[in-house]
Length: 363
Ligand SMILES: Cc1cc2nc3c(=O)[nH]c(=O)nc-3n(C[C@H](O)[C@H](O)[C@H](O)COP(=O)(O)OP(=O)(O)OC[C@H]3O[C@@H](n4cnc5c(N)ncnc54)[C@H](O)[C@@H]3O)c2cc1C
Image (cartoon, rainbow, N blue to C red):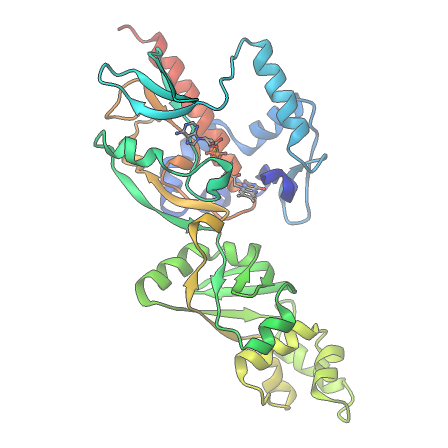
């Protein structure tokens, strides 16, 4: 599914900034990502015959812009190495003797007692892809503390007027800047029937979600022309012929799309000021009240999961020696931009090193 968006594998920005994307979890993830860095992930993909490139925003993609060639090459290599895949086997927890219990369909249960276990069960968003977070109850039953699931990189609700919603849902606002609580992100925002989606918004989705959880709403500010200072923008609007309609002056002078012009009306009231300086101020600060968060099932990723203090440096569950956990099932979150897959791959590598170390350790 990630491949449908081009498969943004990782990001090319400097490591310090990269690690900052993980917020509070950055400290715990730092040694894990440094040990399997964006450069390592790129080398791994290229070692599987998938050349990569850095897009204009610094994001890294395979040249094929899809997941299937990489996945096929990877599965082929694993099969050659002797990995056996047991598909359609649902892990249902541990038996009394510590064995793993699998539901293999048709009412059949299989039990197995491995030397070591690595859990990579995913988060709880997009449950129809299989990662439904149901394993959370099995781990909680073992006394393992879980942070509650919450949507990350999700859309937000805005109470649009019916006419704006009917006319502009599905329209993008390109090259805008969004800000909230002193944080700013640039990129694209998509107008939807329920509110807003899009990469720029996802970058702020954690503080926006937390504010809505605490206060029931959050006030987002959109700058529709972040590349121009207010005075420059005012000068351009002033140059547009004064006898034209306001919409035409905004379209020609400020280069705004019909969706952006109507968003101005939606947010500032139908009567926009005509004076260029005031108008430019309105374009650079469009206030929108976000009244809700789209549900977890529709979020690109999830926050929450196994608390990081429940695993040791090798990502072994302290409460279940010999069992390791990696990927989105651990309690971290990050914006889109390749930071999700990077942390999944890097924590997978860390859990694998931990598991090998466990197997080699004297009993
Ligand atoms: C539409 C979309 C686009 C995305 N695009 C990108 C992107 O371009 N770049 C990026 O960095 N990230 C992207 N992401 C996020 C990224 O795909 C995830 O963060 C990542 O796949 C999580 O990997 P994981 O291995 O932890 O879990 P998953 O990939 O979710 O894998 C978990 C697996 O465990 C299985 N499972 C769960 N419970 C059980 C059980 N009890 N028994 C047996 N199996 C079980 C599930 O079926 C699933 O196969 C995107 C996500 C979505 C939804």
